[in-house]
Length: 119
Image (cartoon, rainbow, N blue to C red; front, side):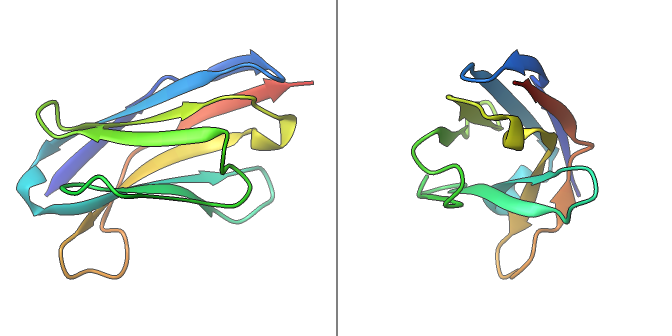
């Protein structure tokens, strides 16, 4: 089992920045990738970004490309999501998720952290 805990959410003005962190514990040696997802009120959960746990390769949704950056620190067993030039439409609960080797889906989820961007 892997446990994930997010932190760093909050209220920010449009154009501002926030940095989310996700600390992993447990069988982190099973991890293959870490993803960030978000869910706004009344909307489905959507993919935001992904980082490979070992290689560090990244992928981003078009909506955040060029504004958000994700990275991982294996020694600290943590991933981060740096969010710049935030927009009101970025308002959502943000979740980190862990993907184990051989899995096509994400196997572990954090509890989520609220990000609110005021216009």
